[in-house]
Amino acid sequence: MVNVLLIGNGAREHAMAEAVMQSSRQPRLFSYMKTNNPGIALLSEKIFIGSYNDLAAVNAFAKECRIDFAIIGPEDPLNNGVVDSLKSVDIPAVGPTKSLARLETSKSFTRHLVEKYHIPGNPKFRTFSSMEGIEAFLDELDGIVVKPDGLTGGKGVMVQGDHFQTKAEALDYCRQVLKEHPSVTIDERLEGEEFSLQCLCDGKTVVATPPVQDHKRRFVGDKGPNTGGMGSYSCEDHSLPFMDRKDVVEGIEITQKVADAIYRETGEYYKGVMYGGFIITKSGIKLLEYNARFGDPEAMNILPLLKTDFVDVCKAVVEGTLHTLNIEFEKKASVCKYIVPKGYGLPKDHPDAQSTSAKIEVGDVGQARLYYASVDKREDGLYMSTSRAIGVVGIADHLDRAEQIAEKAVGAIRGPVAHRPDIGTGPLIDKRIRNMQKIRG
Image 1 (spheres, helix red, strand yellow):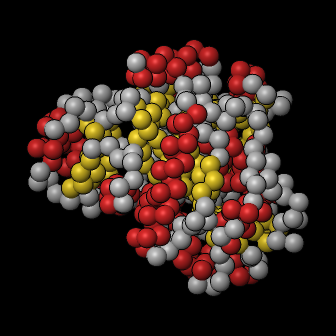
Image 2: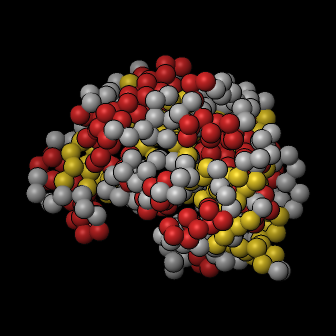
């Protein structure tokens, strides 16, 4: 038997917990969460509710449960150094150390690493620790992207044309960022279609999972504010409708080179997930950013399709033996749609903003899978918080059927909730295909 520690309490971690418990290795799951996720709790032998800042509590819980290895879900514990802390008590983890988690926590670290080791994919960029020189650099760019250095919950990146219009607005946002962060990275804005490529890495070997497309915008048609992600889809052929096969190959090659560069730069092997956010442009694949963990919602698209034993995969990551494992995924499509409070992403004075903390009821969701995110299970039922509530996932042989399964299940969840009905649908995907055809010429 294997004792596994899961750190995290969202829908992503619920999917990870499910993948662990489907293992043939008879795992015992122990979960450290900052709030009680009822889906994870149901799968766990024992849970502990505590702060991700309390590394002593994490270590004590891990030692008490005789943990063989840990799996880290969210970025906050990685940024706090939880992997280093567990390593100090001889518990390995699927997740990078605090130093290597800079791949996500520091936009400038990643940009400069890619530049130093001559890895393709960087857009035109510069990093600034003060306002000096920013205005002159903005004058060199046709379009502007502003990225704070540090964690922002996936909501800190601001893009010209989407979040602001003028150079003056960009300068104002840079000033705001520099009050709260040590530096700001400014990229040229790129035109194209984005995709998520979540790769497993043991420090030497990189193995890709099927590509996924996330939808950050709150409302139908990619309108409204950025969110943590309103949903995502993957396709049965392990590509995406607007992609060429070489796009995935280029993404894997960039990630492998980044993994090699991290070791050359630090002398330390990166063990965990390297999740690259890429964009396909007229001049090829460009790197938008890396995350140092599975995506949320993207984990819910690919983990249910994993045919290889997830515990074996995790052990191969920590032991450095990924090259010996044949990692396979089912040739199925998946569509994830997030149930959120009606007020999610809306100004506080909006009439629907009061829908948070409301009670919801889950009826018959048919063939869909549910992954609980930010919900509170009380004696009288299930309550939402201010954040995303439930990831609803449809899986089928073809994308259109997977979308139908997810959309039907959404209708079985009652309360003041909202979702994006267009995710995974033909019209939105056709729009992506036409955009990519136009860009490629």
